[in-house]
Picture (cartoon, rainbow, N blue to C red):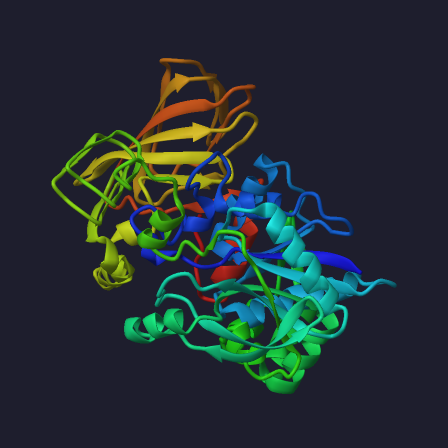
Length: 486
């Protein structure tokens, strides 16, 4: 049997705000070591036999970031399927199963479904569990991985195991996320497992069970898949058809109903990094049981998670707290209330605050920009353009721009003129001028951009040409009455 890894890259990771943001969520971040959670998920597959290149399912807004992270890690991704909007895991996995079934020739393809935002400490134990799960999947079972419950966690669902089946067990019962008192009772009872949210099943079995229990989901996903389009690394299901698909998780849609559910125990130091407390629990700690990252000073502080991203953070006389500092936000929370960070994000959303969406540093397929300062009628950005990359040919209706080259060489298009600028040289882009910025060199181009005008929002961009297909996508979106800007 061939194994098709399916990496689910959706989700906003709101409980890890302010580090995780809607447009740069936790799966794209590193929490120890050089690899991000997404890259570590893909690299965890190295060493398997009969494993195909991973297939990713991600949000439209994250497509370039996901593709770039795969390239940076040297991972060849067979395809990146784009969800026009999040519909939970059942539609996402159904898309992957339809894509995998088209690759199937003689050997049965078994899907190994992995969320992109998990930590696994013992990769060898993970490989053993996957091999056991593949054996069960070959017998027609739909397999989940159960992590032995070690403490009363209220953020996970639980699994009660039934009779042994080969290297695993039948699933006796799936249990909803409990309140703390019930979770404590589960630990005292023993023999229960956390539901990891990772699965193994054949594409054929999954689609069959989905047809039985949620045929409405399968019908809509299939229709959107049949009307798909492709550009560059990306496969796009039909947006309107996919958006009309009922949202549901694979657990509710299939796993809690099928008679073929099985479980393989996974003893590999696993965490879904669902809160700052869960990250503290699986991180290396100092003698005071603190997890310290960045420029941090502590005195008489124990059992805490403290992270400094941009400046010194000092903490004195506290116990079991979370302190996370970024360029534009600081979180201070009690460790045992860290799940409540999602309520802070809800407040930011209600207030339409930018801090819920993105950091000051915003990544683009050509590099990134970082907001340095802003005020009435002006904004200052630092722009980094990768070697050989270029911004789109564009214009603005409401702002003019000054560009100052800090390092590297810039090739500038301004209406009919094309010219180059070196370090310490500058140019002016008048309001309404059609312009483009290109880095023709072999090292990054850094410029300072000063914007001035009546409106400085990122949606004041009219693209005419773009190497990354964004102009075409915006044109299609505009015809439907939407606008997409990235």
